[in-house]
Amino acid sequence: MTRLAVVSAGLGQPSSTRLLADRLAAATAGALPGGVDVTTIDLRDHAHAMVDATLTGFPTGPLRAAVEAVGEADGLIAVTPTFNASYSGLFKTFVDILDRDSMDGRPVLLGATGGTERHSLAIDFAMRPLFAYLRANVVPTAVYAASEDWGGGERLADRVARAGGELAALMGARPAPPKVDPYDEPVPFETLLSGTARS
Amino acid sequence: MQFGIFTVGDVTPDPTTGRVPSEAERIQAMVAIAEKAEEAGLDVFATGEHHNPPFVPSSPTTMLGYVAARTERLILSTATTLITTNDPVKIAEDFAMLQHLAGGRVDLMMGRGNTAPVYPWFGKDIRDGIDLAIENYHLLHRLWREESVDWEGRFRTPLQSFTSTPRPLDGVPPFVWHGSIRSPEIAEQAAYYGDGFFANHIFWPKEHFQRLIGLYRQRFEHYGHGSADQAIVGLGGQVFMRKNSQDAVREFRPYFDNAPVYGHGPSLEEFAEETPLTVGSPQEVIDKTLTFRDSFGDYQRQLFLMDHAGLPLKTVLEQIDMLGEEVVPVLRREFEALRPAHVPATAPTHGSRITEEAR
Image (cartoon, each protein chain N blue to C red):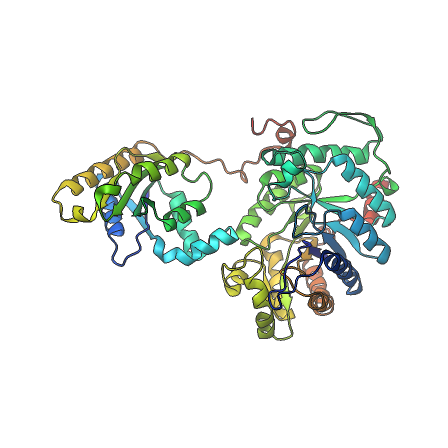
């Protein structure tokens, strides 16, 4: 079954960031032809474990399961509150803990929330470059929800539907690229010695 | 099974008193720890190599030569010798000299080093880390086995008709371990030569190291050195013991909470759950160490980290006594009873390698 991971960096309970994440997930699931297995990760639940992981170098317990769920998903929805014109520190910490190369070629839909629409470009000048560096395959439409959007008629719903459709199309169009496991397929020593392994 | 101590050689304030030992004190403490290891019936003392404060051991063979003169039985080793930034010619010379002085009681562990500035300080580029380890060791391996070496590589001045002196004691090079915590390439390298593989698994969960050691074992067999379970594996360990488990936890907690590697992060209990760290009674140390065999198979060398995080020397020496009296004799017996006959009991020694050579 297609697997969709949803990461919400919202801090409130309830959280408008989580609300947006859920709507994006529903729109994506609705646009995928088959069934979809959705794993939603509230980063708040892993806050302590994330700091520990940055110090020890390994995630433990439920955080490890969250990192694995993101690594194995066919698509990712990543939503953060806007703090000081950018993603939150908690959001970036989670990204820093992800396995190297785990976003490689992965379809990703970006979302952010904020008090006013003045910060809507934070998605484009902060989140997009981050995911570009990770070589993720980010869909063109990203969704920013300011406080007033929650009472703003159909416009938010339209953007959510368009973004979900784009992510679903990308997830359906191409399976995630196969990964070479260096433990299952080690580089033979003669290749290492001839210095051609990395050229 | 060989049991021993490995030390990083850090100068760390004692968090309970704020006292910082001088470099002179720390160096003498390392020697005292090595002597205590022999006295307590352990087999190996291994020192790290570092080129930046707060670490003192920049010159391992100098220290090990001194320890060799003050001990009789102890195998002197490293954890690790930097194969990336040291000249392999100098490693060949230094460790052959040490072999002669120590009567063959020498082996060594190759490592890449994880302190980024050390590479540029020694004129190297950290991005070449794996390539340096591969090429430099290939030269080192030849220097100990060929009288006259012609060499040209990417990383050092070419050699024509070079003879590394002194020649290895009895014509038998020291046994070599390759240490790695994350690189399948190094497991592959160790397997290719039929050398030992040391996984210092003390800071991370076991699943990662099971793959690394599994790869080494499988490739050891692939390269024809024996069956996978005959590959020579070494593991780390980190323990603090008192007769009563609660006393051990109470005494060690401030050292854990402020330790350079993991301090101010997870709790002692969480970290002990996920890694080999054991803080408790000698029996708990025995039980946890026995699980290493369940995770990684029969192995040949177990090194414990005892003297870090600012623990006072007196405490460290007490710990080594407990290790020698209450833990290691039981582990020797238990591991030996479980070991299949075709699996080597210990890593190769100078004596066993001479016998092997003669065959």
